[in-house]
Image (cartoon, rainbow, N blue to C red; front, side, top):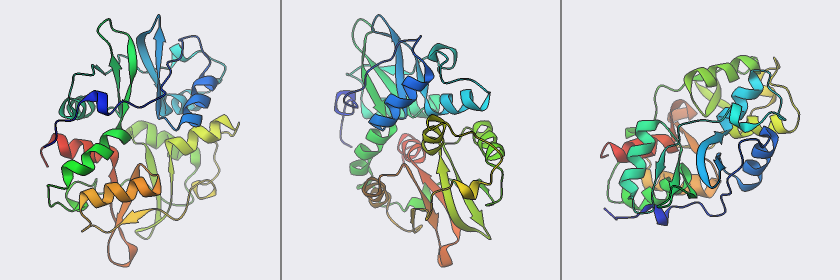
Length: 256
């Protein structure tokens, strides 16, 4: 196992936002940078983080994007220092069910963020030493919705289950997918999370891998495609599971 530290995993260019900044500004910064979260700080010290899920929950509850982030941010903050190791990051993410960790300095000041995407890229090397197929660590069965499901009901289901995406499926075949990032982009564009069918907003086709592909190869494929999760499909394209960044972090933490 390689002893990689937090300093090797820091996401560059992460700038904290103040607690009174509007949700719209947080969403805009996250969208431009491709980040799933943004630290909220005062005097350089972390108060919380605002996530894609926070923005969706805020919008679904009828909140305005002009509202300050302090009313919807996630807290307390999962925090580590540069001296912590990859193992510590995976353990913290698994225990806190978080996709990010805020990195703080000796005086408690924010130095950056470690996101699951960076952790998973590091894990590709670790999993090269484990001859495991992605079927061994994928989430199965997969929560899916049919194409005609109203969008607002699907969003409520995602928030209730605490998941970052939903696969739209029919007769066990994936038809499309939509993610928290997709929803935040639509919220920022002024679209309502209304009752139109999910097939009207889903992305298609769904990026998928076979169940026998080795984990490290699946990670490299995810990076190539620029996605945070892939469907796992068997014979005839039937949906067997989903492999997410969170699955990979948990698998490493569990000693897979």
